[in-house]
Image 1 (spheres, helix red, strand yellow):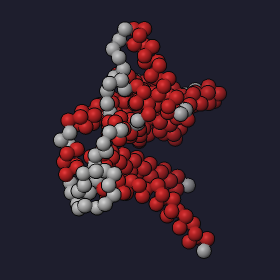
Image 2 (cartoon, rainbow, N blue to C red):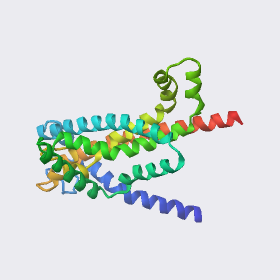
Image 3 (cartoon, rainbow, N blue to C red):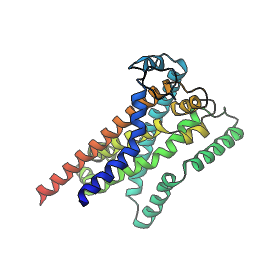
Image 4 (cartoon, helix red, strand yellow):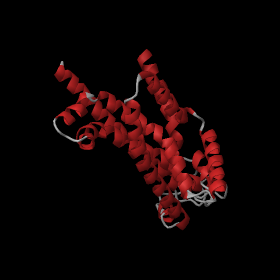
Length: 272
């Protein structure tokens, strides 16, 4: 009885979380002229067709992909370097740096967005640069993606035998070559996971992007602007596409993590 109650409770929780998304996906194929209309009028793909013919949506998609790719690559490089530096610190400095690193993750997004906006406006006024736009968006996205990359790479560094790097140098391998030949392959799964996480977070962000975008529009900002006007069923199709992309990326990340965990467990069993 207790097990059945637990299953029912779990089912209700998942139903509450995913029923609205399921309704949105279903009605993105509805042949109706109003997104707020919940009467099924017939199956149609016309809203997806109109979605990919809309110049403003395609421009917002292009901006989103440029920002997400740039932020993911930059935060991965910087986050990997930071993780290596933090891992080599002593216990107390490492704990302090980890607290500093984790702070952007627990800080409310609206506070981060407003503070970054004020910083960029001050920098524009001080150095006489251009107004907020693509540059400020990329910098903001790197800022909030960086901690996730660090937290993805650090566990791989801790799992690695610390003597491997020194052993490679003892065998005549230069320091830089030792890093790329020995350390980098060992931590590559964490780097790839961190990059995918950074890309997912960047492509999905609204709050911080809203405050630092200036006149540049990303997909989440464009969706928000659509909801303030007449709501077209295109928003259902666009939201479905975004959900599908993020879901696929999350499945890839979770699959990689599960495969790595199985590999580690098998290695421990063989060693025992």
